[in-house]
Each structure stands twice: as structure tokens, then as C-alpha cells.
Image 1 (tube, rainbow, N blue to C red):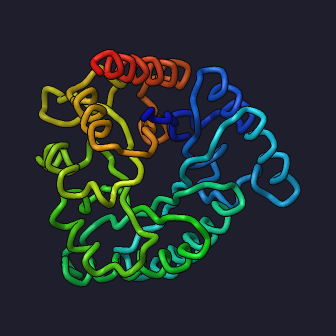
Image 2: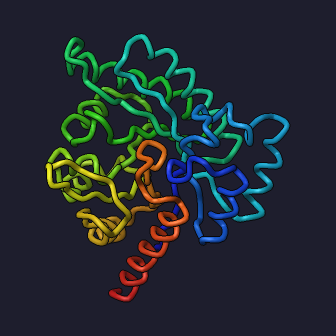
Image 3: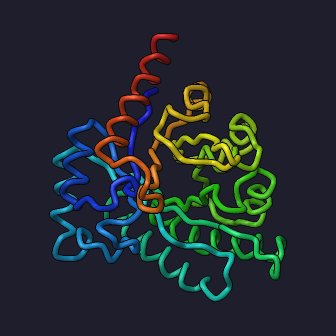
Length: 277
């Protein structure tokens, strides 16, 4: 079993669509995870996916043997006045995923507002996931709740899943976010493995003031080789996708540095794993 490798477009927010495809192909990536294209974060509105461009876009991807592995939305369900907008965006994005042959869209639970409380917020997140999941079920797409914001550790995630009623709902495991709350990767995976369909790989170090700072893969504290081994030993069938949030953190390295560094690092780990076998 060999993993497929992708990167999320937050790593290269200033690149054109053509350059994203060209560099992914040149560097040996298998796919791309989309979180914005040329400043457009609502992916169904992005230029490459408009009716007059969509067929050419699909042909370009096929010619390069590249896959769009996940469409990352801004959908979140903890703010009541944004709920209906999140449902609209989610359904529009599922429709786009069908056209592109993309298996997943990403959504957030996100925060637990003190004025609303955990119980009501969990119910709202579960309702949003259920509505989108039921829309996705007949379309061959899964709706993945990312471990993000307040919804990162397994007890709260399990509480959401217990109230969610759709076979098309799963999880996107961001390997860093639960660690920041004190939950080890081994515990996260042990408790949530049946629901995990996609994995974000990232790294961080601790600053002198005690804060977390994102860094190049392999330069930080995240036990990425051990996590890859855990996934491999348990037959994880999905993608390993670099999330390097250059768009939100301009001080991070340029994509000309981060994207080659990631694929070299992760392929070295995979070669070592094969050698162990």
C-alpha cells in the first residue's frame, strides 16, 4: 500500500492555476487540495471551474495525471446566522466535486460560543453535517469535518458524530490541532480511525514565549515518521496532504521552498518504511 501525496493551495496563494498544475506535475505530486485559487475562496466561483473553462480544466488535470483530492470550504456551523450560507456553499461545493471527480469536501464545526454553549453547538454542527451528508450520499462525495478550532479532541468529535446521521460524513485529521490541545496522535487515531478519510500533514515548533509556530515539515516537533507508520500499519487508504498556511501566515517560506521540501521529506519517510518491511 502506497500513499498518494498532495498539497493544499494555501501554500501558494499567489500562484496562477496553470502554475499550480505545472509545479504539482513537475515536483511529482499526485494531487492537489484546493483552498482558494487566485484569491477566490468560494471554489464554485473560481475561474477554472466556470462553464466555459470546466472541460479544459478537467482535460488539463487528466493530461498531467493529477487529481483534485479535496475541496476545502469556509463552511462552519457554530454561528446561527451563517448556518444557511454554509449549507448553500456546501451543496454548491458538492456539486463541483461531482463534476471534478473529487471524493471529499472539507467543512468546520469550529468554535463553541460561550453564549450558545457546547450542547447546542454540537447539535448545530451535527445538523449541518447531516444535511450536507444526505445531499452528498447519492453523489459519491463525502463531507469531512476537519479537526479544527474547538472541535479537535476525540470526546467532542465523538459527541458530534453520535448526533450525525449520514453515511457520507467523515473526518479530516489535521495532525497538529489535537496535539495543541494535549491529545497525542496515537490517541486521536485510535479513537477516530474508522472515520478518518483524509490527513493534513504539518509541523510546528515551540517559541520562547511558549507559543506554537508553524514551520517547514521536518523542522519541528511533530512525530511525522511515527504518524506515517501508524497510518501504514493500519491500512489507511487515503491521501497525505501538506497544509502549509502561507496565505494566513505570510512570514512562512515561499512555495518554491515548502513544496519541494515536503515531497522530498515525505517520500524519504515512505522509502524508509518500505525498507523496514
